[in-house]
Image 1 (cartoon, helix red, strand yellow):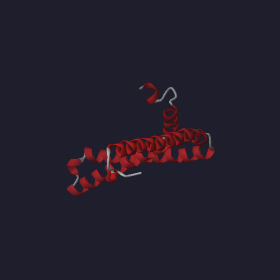
Image 2: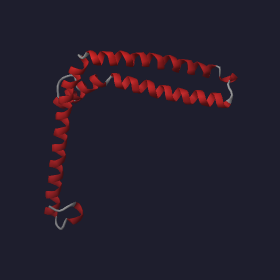
Image 3: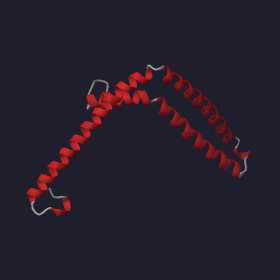
Image 4: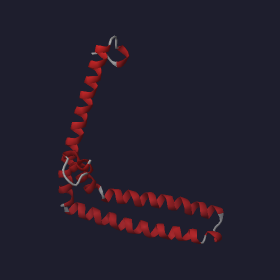
Length: 132
């Protein structure tokens, strides 16, 4: 079968379009099956004592990061007493800590995101795709 740059007539073009669409549909089907399987893994993960331990460690890191972030933000309240370098350092620390905080939150949400994607993949109620 020809590729797009080797098309000689409209029939070749139509055949190529059909083949590409079929390939994309198959890739999407495989992806959705993987999401549905991930929902099962998420259920197994959340019932695991290992996950609970990991989650408590993440929660501790989240609490520490949030406290540190608030301390750095408080430095901005006293910005008049900070030098330009101290202010720049505080701003960079704030960005770094906020990024860390968001990463921890995303890690903690992995099982619920996997379950959500699995529901969407199977078109179950409670998923965005089922309501559209």
